[in-house]
Image (tube, rainbow, N blue to C red; front, top):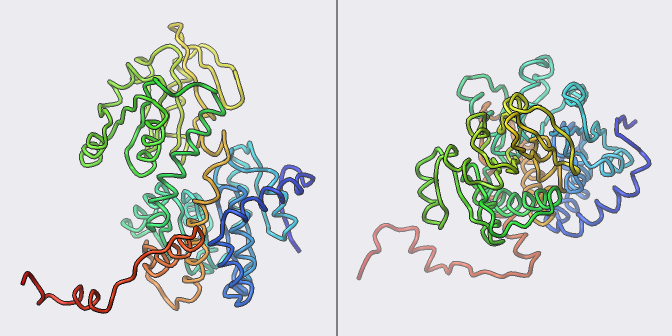
Length: 418
């Protein structure tokens, strides 16, 4: 019997419409789901997932269930759950524990409730599920044979666990698949972050000094999109290679300390903490807007902002005005959490199609493996390329194939200039 905890079960019909819309724009995952329905590769497998509970996640959850799995799902961010979708999934026999505006205590209660199902496979988005499992639920570890991780931030944490010898089971870094980070991180984050900023502020980006904190794939995507909308894009970085790349891509690069003096809008996308902190806030213009599109709400040092302020108020949904003691006002979006999910709907379905196809196929791969060392693995190349080929087919794009002569040429070292 399905167990669940959601905000309002009466929202299920609206969630059904959202999931239907997402399904229409996720042709690759839909094909995988059809095969899963016939083959049942996940029969008798319990899957615990800590993911953003969105319409796209609904399609993934239904795909795993179609494959025979029992799915227990919780949200990976207190503000990202679409309550309509959570209600819909409860009606679809998914054990879902998620609602928007959770407290920290409620958030971790949901994670622990999902772990009560003693999963064989875990799906994580930020590694909070895996971290809780390793620190507080050690008795459940023996049941787990493998897992996946969706995000850059989560993979960083998991590689740190592997390095320390703390990781107890194998994890496939879905984030590191080419068909994930080159598209989801770049195009998905770029578009959805702009969407969240515009919904929160309704301001014109053209002509603004737009500061992008971090030039990983997410930062690249946001810089590209905002440049296209006429913003004067400034990039801050700690990695010299990425900083050089940003320069070659046509962006101004400088330390955050200098960018703070001239920026109009600031967005952090690093996976690290305190990217924007007191010394930067003290230099910002009156009216500067601050947002985060990294995973956790620690990239902006909110305690610093609170200490500098005499009062705050909510001006618009997901837009808080902080009145500083010196008279300036700074504006924080979505409480410093993921602005693209908290203030918008997250990535477009078309790009999540590839990310979640990698998830589904990686779960199937883990179930079929007899034994793997407790390390962080890349998505197998054959899965990555299979997803790309299915996506090309879905959008009616054909590509060339190597001839036998070309294959032989690439396989030999003897052929050279003649």
